[in-house]
Length: 309
Ligand code: G3H
Ligand code: 13P
Ligand code: ZN
Image (tube, rainbow, N blue to C red; front, side, top):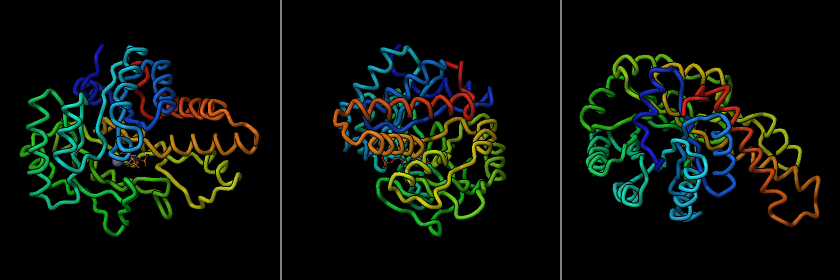
């Protein structure tokens, strides 16, 4: 099976009240850990590549590794550009075989967001590629750019119909209080489910995307802190909130930080216990296993997409 778009995945996820995991990939071990877990659970997958990942690993390497994942697993896998910030970047990904791109023009005023998104949609659709856009602004860190909580803004449900109609976009990321990174809430976690509900009412059957959806497992934060790290106050989105979102209009849940935490905690602990190891396979292998464990847990206990491939 070749790489697929997200159209069919989202249709089934919407109707079935579950979500597809969209995991950020930056190297071979992360890809393998994710794909092993999805294969075990027969789950559809979205593997997503940010501009930073393209710079770090080279987009050709990532694309070839994702193709290897398709070939070895036989799973329906979409290759997605995460947070594309320009038409040129989205076009480059469409031209190089991605099956889905995100144009994130959420920092621009509404009318400009519409016109940039529309331009990407026209080009992508001409080439059989689907498009995700963003309305509202998440807080947190993306590509080393920090958006302060005061500059973040919730999605306005009054704007979503006009946005979707005018752009022709295939899915929409909304801001309901999640944020990127490992420090999501200062106090009690709170998401605006009322906004999600209203957006769902205004766009019946339309797939919604949740960014910044890592749950920041405290077991990994504890290990990182135990072995020299310093992450006091790290906190993510409680899993029951993600399950609730998946049962509503949310069809795609983005997870990156949890994989980073699993990899980092595993490697820190590995060196604390095995200070003389110097073969990268000795620590990257366990890191890959940790990614596998996290993703399997997400698929089965949070997203509910096990057995849906
Ligand atoms: O939303 C951002 C993702 O976690 C990707 O992060 O831009 O550092 O690769 P990155
Ligand atoms: P997290 O930082 O919560 O993993 O969010 C990832 C994300 O939204 C990627 O686009
Ligand atoms: Zn994101």
